[in-house]
Length: 430
View 1: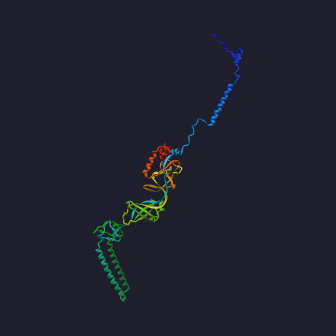
View 2: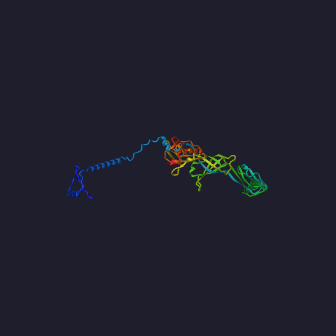
View 3: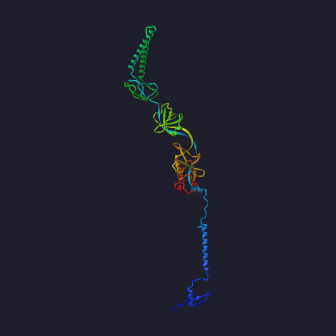
């Protein structure tokens, strides 16, 4: 196997040049050098250009090609994206303020009948439950002993009268003294007092009604012995009736004597009365003031003791008539109603209930003219822009029908369909 000779050096002109061993050794030990550096310079220029391009690209903010700008949504599309609520126009009306209180019907007069003397009942003229007149005789005692007492007293009066006359005649003749005349006069006065007492005893044997009314109790019988001062009956006068109520401290300033009052009895009867008394001192326990209302009851159709509701007008203010179903609570727990302005912005108004009726309530605190959110108020908040649709909702059935029709509309429909739809909870969350 032969060993190849070292390669020959190639010159610039392509011819091979032979070098001596000394020359090759010197070339091997000397550092490398390049006669031309053109390739290195070109790489530097390319690198610098790339750096400039990168810096310019980063400075321009151009990262990825963007999609073409979408056209601005139309009014119908914007309305379809908003939460749709039903609103009802409302105008404030003049409403009378009324103070309402519960009370009890009391009779105008109610008293017990007592025996003014003692004795045996001889005759009972009326029975319990009868309507009696003032001074009417209800029963009589046995008058036999009292009649004899009256006769004796009258005889004594006659005797004293004769003695007094004789004493005066003797005094005129100068036979009697003035002391005798004085004694005779005193005896006559005593005899007359005895007659009056006997006559009064006879009158007391008759039990009479103290005033006109209804005999609520009269439990005595003929032959029964009744002592003096015993309660034998009870008479009640409920013409007129008196309704007693309690007035809270904050309402006292609105109640005055002479004000008219509407009274509804639990029996179904209604009447108009008048405030006749307002207390000037509060009850120590309840801090309320007593008041009384007089109600005519000419025929006695309303019995005493029944419950009654009193309504006293105290003024008027402007309020809106709404359904209790549209009331909502604010973030702080206040009671209010949500309305929508002309720009479709929701506003929450704190309200106060002025008057309650069976078909709705009157509230104060809303603007004079406004649009009240009647359906969807639970899905929107104060300051939110919505798509309001005016509807006249009357009564619970109509309100439920409106809710159903609004819930049936999907959020993805066109503008006209969206205008008829209501916000679902999901749409409100979005």
